[in-house]
Image (tube, rainbow, N blue to C red; front, side):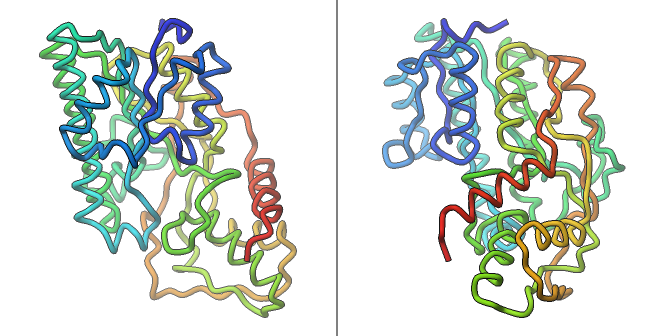
Length: 321
């Protein structure tokens, strides 16, 4: 088991939405602030091998948690398939390979590499609930396949490096995140912040309707960001096996029901229209989360209603329009 108090931990993407919560959770589990290091995008372009080498030389980590990603909702994935494939594959490729080289040359022992993957890696028609053993039984949903496949390739890389080099890398698959501090930009956000913003702004402006993407028939599982930070921390400390692990809350809700719930919680009294010309994305999404419980004792704690209320309250308190 990793004792975080004794480690130099690098968290790529640590300044982002999940990263900020993960930093706080790592500290609660013993990580010392002076040994918790976050490479800033202004200083290190992790898609460039030379920048990754320089980051490792300057920060000398013993544990690496790789959160950094270029990602967005359906629209962003549809507009940037090439960039999302290249950037996400390149970052992981350089980080894993340079960590291996450091271990072999004796520069620093990187005891643990934690790769945070994506639920988009699962096949489009994965049986529900998604089990980790189904990960290779088909092609991902087309709109986010480049991003999902890039991340899944890093699972193969870590398993191959474990087999050949004894490199201790693990792969986690968190489901859709949400929570206070999320990205509410309608061009790049995921469904919960997008719907919250649409309903809150429509109410403020006295509008009579809100238009939502798709048919509303697709279903999703949503995972509160604090719970995800807890799951990643638990796996970092206690999980050392090659098999990928789902992280989630183990439930699903249709997008139509989600919209109705957000409409009620925001107090919007107008009508909701569905734009069926926009894609629904993967038809269903819910995880089997039993492996995380069995292997390192993790279960989600925050109920969906509580998490949704906290997220809406945070957004309303920002006073943005």
